[in-house]
Length: 557
Image (tube, rainbow, N blue to C red; front, side, top):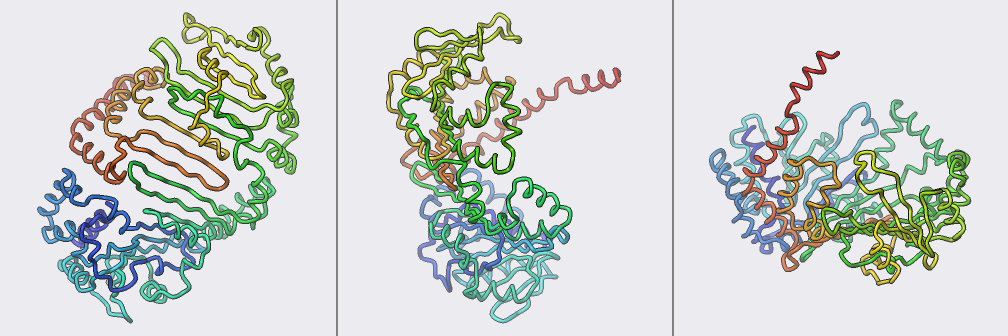
C-alpha cells in the first residue's frame, strides 16, 4: 500500500505541476477529454485545470532541466524506480493531456453531523492499455487491492475511504460508496454540472485554472444543524434579509497565464434578493474622474474606492441602524444625511517613495465633495491645529510622544474643482493642482474599488520604506532576500459590480508567466540552504532571551 500511495502521490504532484508534457498533441484520446461531464449536477465545488492550455504555455523540456525536478527524479529512482517513466512522461501512464483534469466535492445535507464529504479526483484517459499497465505497477505489492469488474469499469478499494475507478475514459480516485453515483461518474448523463447556468457560464471562459462553488449545499447543511441554524437565522433577522437570500448563490475563481503577465479573477453570482438588497451600496464606477488629481510621477501605489452614499443611507435606514450611527456621529456634529449631502462617497489615493531616509513617503488623497460648506465645517473642528493661507489649509499635529524631537506631522489641503486634495507634501500637492492625467488611476477608477502597486519602485526604496514598518532587522534581511526571487513588476486589481479581476505583470515580458514562475521557483530551490539559514537566524533572534524572560515572569508571579 505504501508503494501505491507513493506512486499516486507522485503522479498527482506531477499533474499539479501543470501537466506539461511535450508529447501531448499526439495523444490518442479514447473518449471525451472533458472530465467535467462526469461531475454531478449537485456538486458543491469543482476545480479544473486545462492541461492542454497549460501544456502549450510552458516549456516541459526546461522543467526537466531544473534542479528540483532532477533531484526529485533521483529520489524516486532510489525508492521506486518503476515510477520514473511515468514521471518523465505522464502519458506513459495513459493519461490524456488534451483537456481538463481536476476534482469535485459534494457536501451532504447532514454534513454537520456526519462530517462526510464525497470527493472524486478525475483524470481523462488517452490510452486504457497504458493506464492499466501503470495501475498494475502501482498495485503489484499491494496484496489487499483486489480489482472488481463492474459494468464498463473496474473498481479497486485502496483504503477505508478511497477507491480507484478505471474505465475507457477516466481514471478516478473517489470516496464515493454509492454504486449508482460511481456508475454516473463512468457513464455521464445529461444531468451533470453543466446544467448549472453559473458553472456553464464560467466554464465557457476557458481559463487555465478554474474553481467554482455553489453555496446551496453548505447553506442547507448549516440550516439542518441546530448548532449553526440559530446563529445564521439570527444574523439574517438582524440584517432583515430573508432566508431565501442565502440560496442560489455561487462564486468562481480563475487563473490565466499569459505572455509576461498573469490574470486572476473572482466572480459572484448572487440571487435576485441579494442583488436588490446590496445592489445600491456600490457604484458601477466612481462619480468623479480622479486621474488629474493623483500625480503619476514616481507612483509606487494607488487605490480608489467608492460607495453610493444614498444607497448606504437607505440600507441603514431600512434596518433602523441610522439612529445608532447618527448618535455616534453627533459627537462630531455630523449625521448620515449631512455626510450623504456633503461628499460623493468616493476617493483616490496615491503613495510615493520617500526621497531619502530623512523624509516621509509621499501621500496624496483626493475626495469628491458636493458641498464646500460641509468641508469647511469639518475643518473648523480642527481649531488651532488648522491654518488657512489663501486657498491652502495647513494642519499641524502635536508632538510625537515616541520621539519628542521629531518635527510635528503636517498635512496640506486645497479644494479644487469640487475635489478636496490632501497631501503631506507641498511638492506633491502642487503637482496635484497642476493636473496631469494619470493613466493608472484612470484604469482603476472604472469600478467601485481599484488597487495598483509598482514593485519595481517599492523594491528600489525598500530600505527607506522599511523604516515605517514594525519589522526587526533579521525579518527585514529575510524579506529583502526573498525579494530577489520574485519576478513581479506591477500588480493591478479592479472590482466592478460582482466581479474582481487582477493582473500581475512580470519583469520579463517575453516569456510566458508560467515558465517565469517555474524559473523563479528553481532559483529558490538552488538557494534553499541560504534561505533556510536566514530563516533559522530569524527564528533564533525571535526567541532569543525567551527562557530568561519566562523565568523572570515566573519569579514575579
